Image (cartoon, rainbow over all chains, first blue to last red; front, side, top):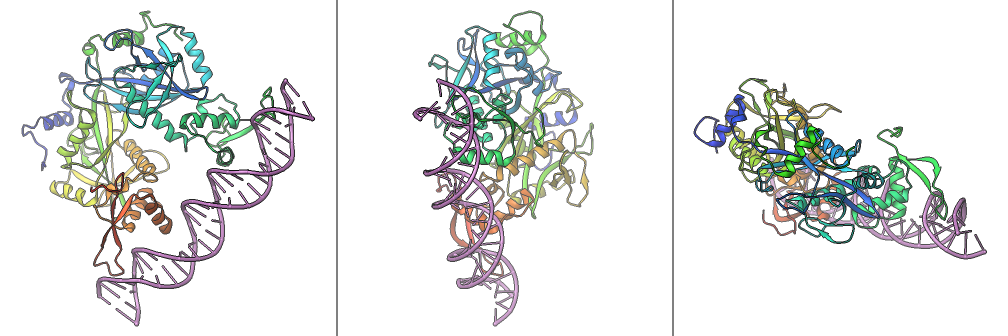
Length: 257
Length: 257
DNA sequence: AAAATAGTGTCTGTAAGACAATATAAC
DNA sequence: GTTATATTGTCTTACAGACACTATTTT
């Protein structure tokens, strides 16, 4: 336990002093910083994410999250938005920081620290983005969690997908995060079109949590919180009594969205 | 909106291709990566944190979080633990990632991305660490939040402390995080000695939340969750009926701690 | 009319908040 | 014995789950 800082030969302390004194740090090796994006959606009652097949070694053929280095004149969050725009073709979606993965050996090529974000988008927009890039190196994978270990990703044909690097662990963290958030935050709206029925909303919650939710109390809770307001319109062509369409009420109940 | 990736002159895409192809990224400018640690404790019913006075420009004299660069052969989380050990003299405390602050201009000297952690320690250990380094460039600051904006830090003499860089915003995020966690996670135990009374535990929760908690339901909730177990011992010298001492039960109710 | 789901009303069990009553060591 | 807080027990209230019943459109 040290008493005061000073140049006593401890390499950590020397590094600290360089930092505090504002020495030029460019001469010392530094990690690369990247960002990866977990783009989540709910499709056919399943939580899915967008994966890319790696076209080059290492781990060629494995599936990975879309990502990029963080530019020197670009904020970390801007870099994540750029990844969404340039690699997936999506703008203006909900995106938030998830976690920073900083293990030394997570990338075999060089030291890369990844500030991972997660984004939420409605299934129709994700489908459009995927079909616009009609190639086999991109897919929507269904996500499931075991009791422990990395997340499992399943391709559209039902086969298990091998994930690159630590992306299975990243996906587990993402799924756990959205499960925790959906219980108290109005995050499910980001996965639905602007107008939706309460049954739609409940189906999204059930898909995320993987467990059924009580229909009656779900309705009471959501309406009681004032998070959604009726639009006055009803769905049509549903083969039964048409349900009311609701929209996200925003933070003060008057947002247009 | 792009259709397929390709070398079409877009600088973002070129960067992406370098990444995917595994080109040597060392020739391109990259940000520095640091970690800062928000060391939190509850002392005299107040949420406090450890701050260091900056000894050099820029922002000389302002108060900052303990931090350091992340070494090239060191994980981000290991770097945060090293900061705690070398700058504060604490080992084995609860520490967890908080958020990564990656704005371009957050440090005026050079581009620095900081992966901020928060740590929790009982007041007695923090006091011991502070008095071991008996100088005026280190203090325990009480934290308060306004409705918006950065956190406010108050020194032991009651004066407001000017915070360096974006550390006021970082502290706001830290306080909001621990407030959110204390509602459902067994995090308050980290701020108490191994044996504590339920009144101690409730006082910690109230200090973190800034609002009183119902005494009876707090007792029932905590005991009902099985998070604490009685030690069979009682506090002495309290001037009234001695309360039972409890200890953290761990994840399976049998952990020794 | 039949089918199917939306939406409403009511009952019940659980848990939190409020409050009263009792317990016990320090003084 | 008085004091001060711990601990237990009871009552009330709020809310989630369960379930029955009505509403309304498509077929």
